[in-house]
Image (cartoon, rainbow, N blue to C red):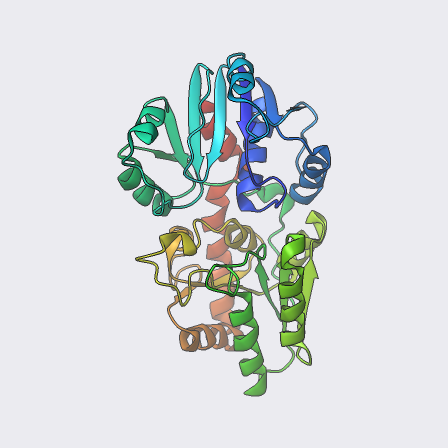
Length: 355
C-alpha cells in the first residue's frame, strides 16, 4: 500500500510531530510511505530528537504548500492509496483512495457549517484523535465519529529508576499564546518554584526542557532572566538522550498547560494529551499536573500522581511528595505501570489496524 503523510508543523518538532513521524515509521515496515515536506534537514533533526528510524521513508515535495497548484496536488495524490493529514481544521482536496484526518486539539474557531466545508468533509474516510478529550470536541464540531489512538511512549528507551535526584522536571516546546505567556505555562512554574525556595525549600532544582522557533527566542530569554538567582536550569533544544537522562534523574514531573485559561471558551489551550507526562511516569517520575484536558486520561489523582487546580495545591501536593518518601515510592511505581500502557508497540498495532 502506498501511503502519504503530511504534517504542517514539521519545523517545530513537538508532540504532534513525534506522533505523525512515529506513525510513518510504524507503517513503513509493511507499506511504502512518503512524507510531503521540502526541508530534509527538519526530518534529520526529528530522527535525532525523537530517536526514530526514517530511512525507509521517502521525502517528497510538499504538495500541500500554497505555492503548489491544486492540479499538481490532485495528480500526485491520485498515486496514493491513503493520505494521512494532520489537520488544524482544514480539509485537503485530494484524489487518494482514502483520506484520514488526524486532530491533535479542538478546533472550536473553525466554521464547519459552510457548504464548501461539508463537501470536503464528505471525502473524509476516518478521523483519528490523540485523546478522548480531543475526540469529544472534534466529534461535536465535525458531526462525525472519530477514533482515539493514544500517542506512543518508547518505554524501551526509558529506565525505571528509583535512585533519583532532588529534581523537578517539566518538558514542553515554547509556544506563544495570543493572550501572552506560553502554552505550557513555564513562567508560572518558575514563579511557583521560586516561591517554594523563598519559603525554605532546600537542595532541590527545577529543570525546564524546551525548544522554540526563532521568533520566540526573546521570550525564552525572558524565562532565563525570570529564573536568575534560583536553582533553575533551562535546557534548549537538547538531544533525545539528554532528555531521557533528565527523566531518569527527576523525582517529580510538573505540568501546567491550561492553568488560568477559560477552557470552556478555549479548550484548545488545555493539554490535549501530554506525551511528556507519560514519558516521565515510565521513568518513575511522580506527576503533579494541572487537572484539565488529556492529562486526566493519564494521571489518576492520588494513585499514580496528583492533579492540581491552583498554585496553592501545586505547592501543597509537591511538598507532600518531597516530605514523604514512602508515598513517593508508591506513586512512582504506580506511575510506571500506568504509563507503560501507552507503549510504542500498542501504537503501531493500532495505527496499522485503521488502514
